Amino acid sequence: AGESALAVALVLTSLVAYYYYLRLVWKMYFEAAPEDRPLPTVPRPGFRWAVTAGAAALVLVGLFPSAAIEWAQDAVAVAGEPSAAGASAPSGSPETVGLQTTRPSTEAPRPRPTQ
Image (cartoon, rainbow, N blue to C red):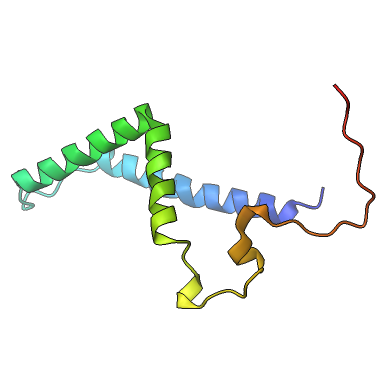
């Protein structure tokens, strides 16, 4: 229903992805590795520490998401909301008011259901 451009974009990006991943599988299983290529080196301890710390942080955020969300909200409250390229938005604009912005409506207010 009018979304043919989106469907074409979906098909084209899928074809690009298929080409990339199928080429990767082809190289892994059907082409021989070059003989003169050196073996990869063993990662240094700093790399292993960084990967382990990142994995641990990922697991902790996955297990305790509310703590991570509260930490992020506290950080935003302390730092203040950033403005685009250092320019401040006019007072009362949607950028400064945030999600609590309401727009005037031309409709009559709907009555609330009684409980």
